[in-house]
Image (cartoon, rainbow, N blue to C red):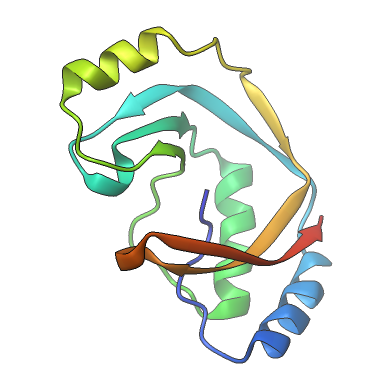
Amino acid sequence: MFLCGELLGEEKELIKKIKSTLNKLDKFSIEIDNYGYKNTYFQALYIRVIKNTKLVSQKKIIDNAFNCQTNFFYPHISLYYGSKNNSIKKKIISNLPKLKKIIEIRNLCLSYSEEKKLKWKTIETFRI
């Protein structure tokens, strides 16, 4: 799940800023709703995350630290990117296990992504 995207700056400076921002964050959990799907490539199949006040609060801290103001926040955990038809997605969901309703967030990652090339690389993982 992305909390903030397109961070600008040198990698070392971003890592330093994340480490100082971690002091402002609380350990938190996310509430899971269910599986979902859309007819968009990057939200083809996902786990819906409930947008509660704790999650929004943590996101605001990160947004403020990185000047990463977003107009729209749709929290979800992507399971599949692609363009399969909805009947295939429904069949996949019917075979997936029941979800835990609460997931504790213990780490945040700084990742590099090239969406057009479908490449993601974790630069560093930080313990909250």
